[in-house]
Length: 82
Image (cartoon, rainbow, N blue to C red; front, side, top):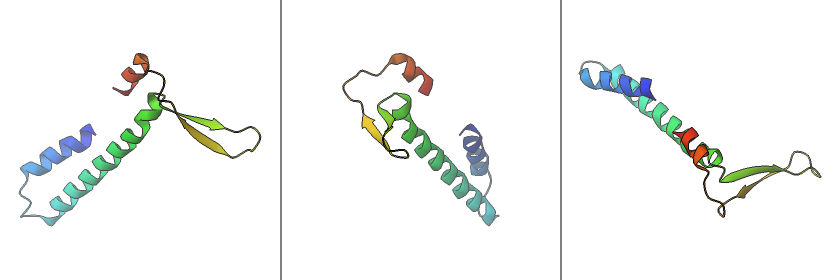
């Protein structure tokens, strides 16, 4: 994220009217940042143990997810996300 953010700042300093590839690089950078943000956002609930993956021993290959909303978030788990 830091590399893409720095790259976007550098591209903002350049005159995009002179080169079409700058706009392409900017949109590619924004796309990468959006993908990384989505990946991070989708993994945070698992880091905080809000969801658990349960495999059924009776039927191999079958997994299920359970939502854990009745327990408080463990603070030591929250610091791992930061």
